[in-house]
Amino acid sequence: MDKKQVVQDYLTKFGVLVVDKNSSSRNRLLKVMVDLGTKRHMIHTAGSMVEAEQILKENQIGLVLSDYVVGGGSGFDLFKVVRSASPNNKKLCLILVTSNISQTAVAKAAEEDVDSFIIKPYTLQSIHESLISTISAKIQPSPYILKVEEGKELIAKGDYRGAIAVFEAALPLHQRPSLALFYMGQAQYMMTEADQAKGKYNKGLSYNSIHFKCLVGLYEIFMKEKKFEEAYQVVKKVAKYFPANPDRLTQIIRLAIVTKNYEDMESYYDIFTQIEERNAEMTNYIGAGLFVAGKWFMNEGQPPKALAIFEKIAVSCSEFSKFMRAIITFLVENNQTSEAEKYISRFSAGTLDHEDFILSDFLIRSSAPNVEPAIIIKKGMDIYNKNIRDYLCLKMLVEAMQKQGLQDKAQPYIAEIEKLYPDKLPLQAVS
Image (cartoon, rainbow, N blue to C red):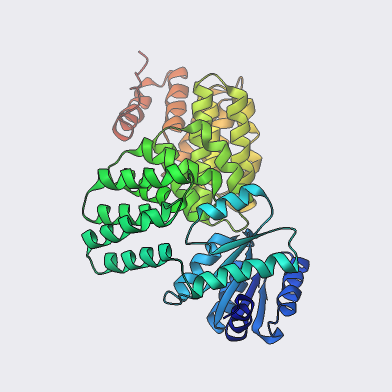
């Protein structure tokens, strides 16, 4: 059958979904698809992940054209949703619309997750040619793809040795057989042959240095082996080249903290700010990561860098009052009360009666120049009687008592500090 006729037949059988957050771009793609022979009632458009998911629930979609960046995620995230909704549809076509060479390279590296890509600015002819090659490949897969699919079926049946033999036969059928090497590595990983699996993933990366599946395969092995630094270097590469999503960014930040790669945290903050829909877990993690990084820079003798990072927390993570409290506490401990004062105004009106604000306000007021010890004692006891416990607050209370000659009265609080905070240096009563 003529390839053009193949496309025409395909477009009469399957619904089309066009996803782009820009309405004019959506309408242009819609017109192109109509010009190619698709019936208007079979074309659906969406401007976000949420809209696209709803359309997928209500319609039989066979062809998806998605922009690289989608409201609420990316084209890659959307394609995962589409595939999970139609896991057995071998003729499903997922085409990514890219705007630059870098995005195109990423699309190629996301082998099997993306069927094809179209580069902006596109024409009717360029889309037609892409559809012809993509749909033809779905209907008449290459010998290489057929071998890969055969091997995947054997993996599903638990015949790992048989699968490896099939993937071996697939290697000479493609100039850059990263996908076959990935699945060969998967089979070896299933047989607990981790070193051999890593070898296959690395071989796959020698053909395509950012092959997504091979990178993820390496990452999972390193994490299982608790080789966190190696795992971090792999996932850092994923973060650099592939569109971020909340779950992946959260994992990367967690691993950056574990491996003490604090200098990278600002780059993850930049990624965080580009994600349109940020969940509370991701915001919590980026706040924690930035705070740890800020402390590190301060301890490394780079206060301006630390303060710049703390400002990022105040801008993007103020919904968590614990971060404002942590910043104020750290700055007061480092004799930077004037800098700490700037963050007291970052507390929202609804948190002014919360523990984080009460303690932060006390720490700033109590560390001000020439404050009377009696005032510190009164405010500190008010907080203590509210059953709020904080190391620095108790320390300031004890020191104020000692300055007032109330050594005996301070002793029980010293004992409580030693009990609650055994990792801190013990306070000594002044005789």
